[in-house]
Image (cartoon, rainbow, N blue to C red):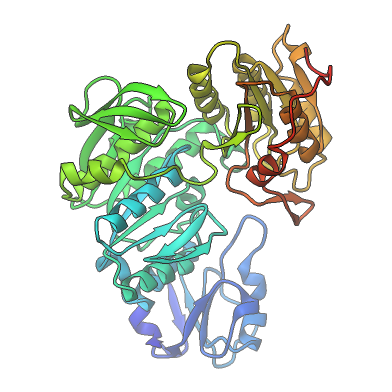
Length: 493
């Protein structure tokens, strides 16, 4: 419980009506969650306006309201705090309510299009293995030391974010590794968080359904580094053309990493096999249980961050050699008859190209790559044909199927994907709307030595169809079909 005046001292307040010392028992942006004694925050969202629910919040017992527009009705004894940007203010209010947790725990944020989950998760596992109780906020899960729960967002809302950090402090965590999405920056979800460092992975086309154009997407990512302070570090991937852009205005200490060319931190891929890679970090060779050149970059980001957090070089490499891939990220399983199944979250053209390029390098003899993929509904439609071009260029056979159609017609999505099929490759492409049947067909088509890639869903255990999440797990599907032998279906030459 906190006094209102104690948690609003760090925000720009235009007007306060009522009792500045009202006792606040909790914070929420959902009027249905309001309980007596709580502060309700009215946020103008992309779909709804919290100001429309102020009256309901008061009826449910809110003792204070944080808003941008004063209510037009009598609010009685409820205290009203008016500010010009409630979304931005709530992060600072929540930080104060939870006793400024990021001043106690070292928080490192990871942003970029691809690699965020892998880097954040591996940092969490690395530091736990080094003996430091740590926290994780990622697309897949939230970990508070050894306790883990499934995540609902890549980066949660500002109140939940601060609540997680406070729980980490309570659990004795010394570090927290978190994904910072472009949506999070645009919606001020990490406002009020004091970051010890930030990592930039790469920037390719994604989320343009929300940001509308690439420059707005880039600006959202860059704003994370602009807000770091002089005591934090900013670590960027120089192999991405926007790597140095991220550092242009940051007051943080600047560092670079690269797997090609010179940088503050360097790594080189020496050799690669289906079960791992030999990689050189600062001239020392280490066998790691990952595949893919892009994973060399991800692991280098992990290594670099650990070094910037003053960890021992040799101990970091020892622990890196023991780490395993994050679920749903180039996760492999053996199918019967000497075939290999791969599940990966790749849902952008660049991510799909990275995965398929890796598999092309690993092909031996007459082995073929059979790719099953789709595209999410209610998301950036422009990337759909681009993914088809990548899949057809780098795969021997392609099955276009349903991903998470959400509120869109799956067959309409597939038709938009098909527009990117390069001329002359049509005979190698099959469209099967039902994802289960698509996967079953791919496994049946696979001959000895072939690789079956299921792209797009990765760790997800559901399909979102018209607002209902139906159980569906790509890895589970592959496992169930592993005994299905090669068949001659005459569907794809």
